[in-house]
Length: 199
Image 1 (cartoon, rainbow, N blue to C red):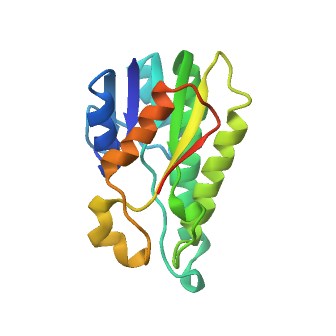
Image 2: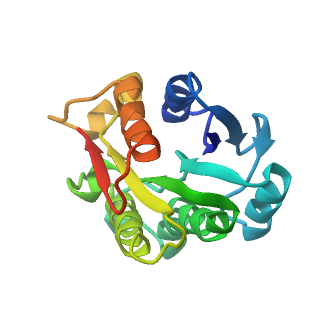
């Protein structure tokens, strides 16, 4: 299969590339580096990416920015960061990308544990992650030509624990290699409208 991986240079993306790259032809995409570049907050950038890449069998997005900070100090502009980037960025990637998928292809988006298990300073992340999952469940019943869509919902990563651990008291981190298996399940499996939790 020919698979586009957006966020290929990130911690999760790198693990996904390592796992799927053993069996498939991957197109690595980053915001500023990698084989191809895309700004998922801009539809013209997404369209240009697919015009360059052409038809594919699967699209994976392991990218998207959020705002973390105290609710009492949060501004609408800060909250909008997650809406424009991780939410609408991934939605736009799916809406545009569906037209470049071969029949029977798949789309895999990324949410996160705080959608189900809120943390302090994470109101933006909770709202965005739940919205991503809602989009996936609804899109699954409308996509045509056998195209499937799922989301992967990872907890905090072991590789990021030193940086983010203090924000997740009592949470158990998981290695990126384990999270990558959920993307494999989404791409190589047959389910649609699913949220694969890796906690």
